[in-house]
Length: 350
Ligand SMILES: Nc1ncnc2c1ncn2[C@@H]1O[C@H](COP(=O)(O)OP(=O)(O)OP(=O)(O)O)[C@@H](O)[C@H]1O
Ligand SMILES: [Mg+2]
Image (cartoon, rainbow, N blue to C red):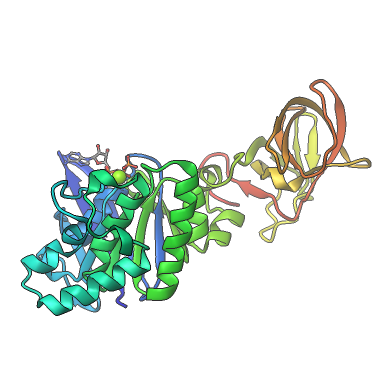
């Protein structure tokens, strides 16, 4: 287990700043997830920790040692890439042990490590096969196994599951979480998939444009997003945003819509954007707001009912078998203790 600490890191590629003044401390044994849209600099950041991309300024520390200019092989890191990058002519076993053989690790030690990784990843029965004889999920397990045999201080994962279908993705995601529970190693995991981030992370780092928007536990980031970008990025269906204003008493009003948010900061008498998550909109008799149903999406174990209420377009999650039809008027209530308020100009949480 090792910490990873990045201080004032700047990376410029092709004359463009990609990572800007980034500070980040990854605790030993943590499962840290870097989450953000395509092009925000996740892979670049991960590659710089691995030593595959040079930083222009700043410092990288791994396991308490300055590694800013260290060779990738000296950093004590195991990396899993999105493309499995297996050698097609080698068996699973040879793919997994290749790095160790190059490094001159004794045969018995290679055997021990490969057997251990194969057992953990359920690859025992596949060791003699070539990559072409494996499914996508099995290939990705081999790629993970190749990183595991290094018995590294820190494991880096760059979207390792994104080439797999949805079911396999969910399965391997759970296996990775179990693997982390077993090994207790420090893991840094890049994804643009919010479900992976929420389910795997001890902390999520939300990135945008080469900068960190927020760092926190999955619940922190989901429940108290630091700004509109984070609020909109996490959650499906996404949080609804309603432009309006707060009066002196703290009541939020928009065209045909009004609610008194019970938020800690108690901002008042200013323009504001109200953020409401679909699970906090409840369609029920006696609700103090009225909406018109525009669309219903059945999801199997629940349904998403979309409504219009004055200027606001809102989704509501319904977990029972009630039927709703477009055009129908329904009463609903918002859980005013769970809403977010943002500054319309800066987008920051009020
Ligand atoms: N070698 C390079 N030269 C110039 N620009 C680069 C280079 N590598 C990456 N970039 C740019 O840096 C930005 C960040 O790229 P990066 O690959 O880190 O994004 P990402 O967050 O991993 O995205 P994705 O989710 O699509 O993998 C992009 O705008 C990309 O075009
Ligand atoms: Mg990437």
